[in-house]
Image: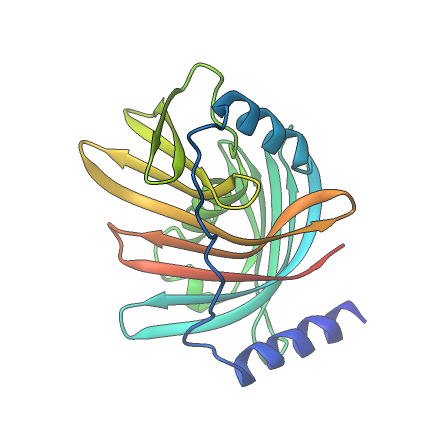
Length: 221
């Protein structure tokens, strides 16, 4: 049954707009009177610690793109994840699991296995999107262009967390190193499921490798 749900969801995605999935941007308002620490703490309390999702994904690289749909499991406390994806025909593409440092590829199609360390790349993107969504309490913070921005040193660079819009939620998380933007994750259209917030739309852009992931939430399991 789950397999049929995944295929049906991906069929709807492809019959719609596979090249571009529009998400509504947050409407920015003044944050002059907003307390950054309160924004951070409120957002942290609104996030689920462990969850499982069905999401559709469009991968874009230059003139190439492909679509997939999969089940993602995340545990933000243990820093563990799992992901299994199928293609539009219902054929299994890959299945992997991992944590903050490691990844175990349980299955991958030969085409993906030929493209370098595929599992490592996917694992990095999962961590970028779902892990460490809350800046440290000691992070530097400024208010700029109707956004509250936290700056946190990470891995020889700086992680920037941008909060804004209704409720002052996380709208972008980006990694900067040596003055160069490496990657960004944009979060759109938050919805409440089981009492916790989930972004209905996510876009990851990797500026060095020039690819983009467009992710649409289908269901919270």
